[in-house]
Length: 172
Image 1 (tube, rainbow, N blue to C red):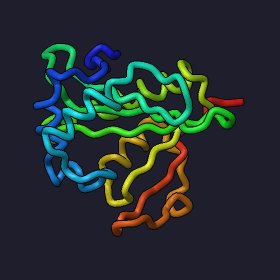
Image 2: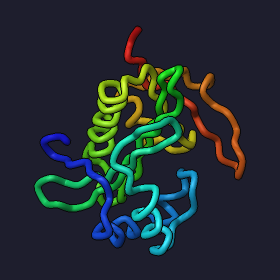
Image 3: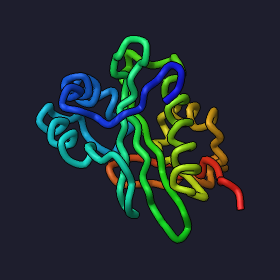
Image 4: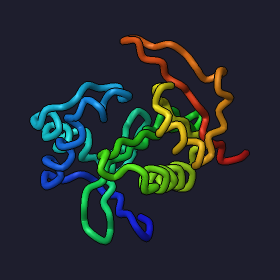
């Protein structure tokens, strides 16, 4: 949580708002999934997005990002626990275009970094993004992207190019 934002698990009350942006092709063009139907959003909200804690490697914690002052759903973020031995995780985020340009993605991604480093004692947290997604790249730059541009680029299926970038190490 921040002064402006509340990060919380999704509820059935969020299905319509989540569907409103997750069904839009322009929102999903850089994501690893196609635009979602309302039924798909509802299934995930009651299934994999219902998790409230990470208890084992391979799990993901999806959280809705709500504007604290208005209660408006802005988007959602995810923290993956990738590897216990190497203490690694990954973050991701998707926001409604209506929430763009106000720093919400940067602010909520910073909360996920704290959660991963302090809550899970992770050593390294990364992010994957389509190399064409300049807005998300700027968010990662703002929160401490330690990538080395071309060293991160690698082709992936469906004509997508993803950058695998180390955001930051927690230290020794």
